[in-house]
Length: 82
Image (tube, rainbow, N blue to C red):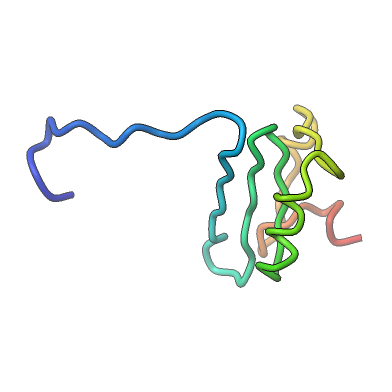
């Protein structure tokens, strides 16, 4: 990290209309997080944006059980592979 160790970190945006997209390391997949808390992985960035901008269709925050599901080597849950 450059600069002094006590430098302030940039503010994190929150609220309606803030979307997050993360690259899933070691894969060709992208993880999308909607402002409502819904999360989903995609291979196609166009499908990812269609899903994010289509809020609230097919959006629901992950349950505690889903958050704890085991991932396979590709970062997908066993449920997503079926």
